[in-house]
Length: 128
Figure 1 (cartoon, rainbow, N blue to C red):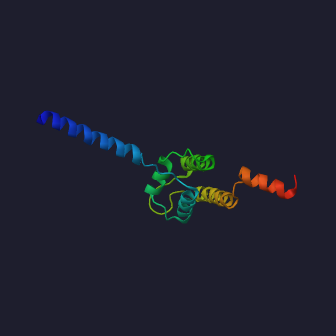
Figure 2: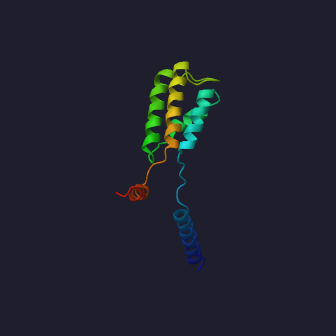
Figure 3: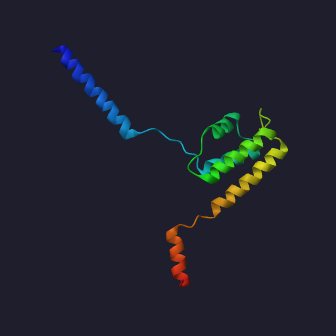
């Protein structure tokens, strides 16, 4: 009898654990534009750490093609301009290139993408 009770309780605990795991899901960390803008600002000012950089290059960006492109371009810059160590992690030329990426990303953030609903609304206003 105790064998059956142990088996039933074990099965119940496993089922509850599986239900919790399914409901909670896998934690996902997504880099947003603000995160990358802040990182680039830290890199340009010399306040970013090696760990900041390592986290940025280690996290795959799949949800935003522009951010993925920025990450890939940063990696390209790092191949020739990364110096590491305390202070500035990049050479002066690397910092200048990162600063141009920062300006590009900040300019992109100011221009809100036009959704289909907004485009239709603009067309109706123009009488098209």
